Image (cartoon, rainbow, N blue to C red):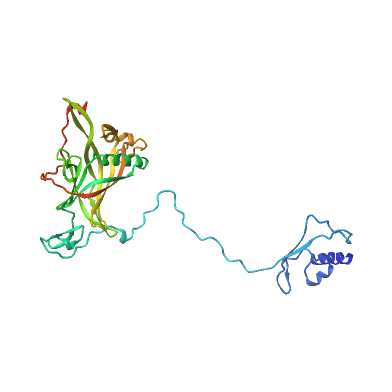
Length: 363
């Protein structure tokens, strides 16, 4: 054991180059980095000793042997360049607009197949009729009544407004009719307005427009969007409909006061057909209503007044008309309507009608 410790000590001294015999190689102690006669610069050498082990000075004494390790840094080729490539970093703010693939852009409908002029146009499919010998997108001879509503904005009041519209529709307080009217020089035309059943409280006997109330004239164009037809209004416009509001007693007779629902909007209409061949429409109304207009809307259901402002309590007004004042509520409502029988001998459709009501309604 004693001889082993002497051998280890001698090996450590030899590596450190303390022996005079090292001079025969031309390298002096302390000059280990000088070039050698036979090649490149000598390797860096290091001797490390565990700090916790006793130091060995001179002849090895009895006791634990110091842990000695020798590390040699050998020359090697330069490591590969592992630098991270430059990656563009997006600045704060909205993402840049990316081009939309042509397949997703709405396009004008292609000319349909030929058809028999004056015929029923059955060969043209559910959404088209035969016009000048060509099957053309056209929903005429059909009228739809809105029977459901899905409020998409304002987000903060979605649920409460869903409840309000569904109550009004289920209670037959709001009869909103959508009537296609064909092509005009200004585009395809829809009439949208309030209606009423031919027989009160009986929806199976057909409807007619309430000609005491305005009927909106909506014009735009048909487009094919992702393979399906959709009508889109050409420009935003003031949209006005009226619904029964509170009632007043006049000469012991209960009279209805009308509540106006007015907002700037753009309308789109998408038809669909189910497995049984029944056609329905989805009409989306997107725009805004002023706070002042919203405060005037009151639905009356079963003698109970339901002010619209109460259902908008959680929504924050925004500046949507660009006048610098946050005084408008955003609106985006998707209405669904089924086909009904329109039995209306009066062909008048005017957006300028103002309903008459007793003076007591303004008190």
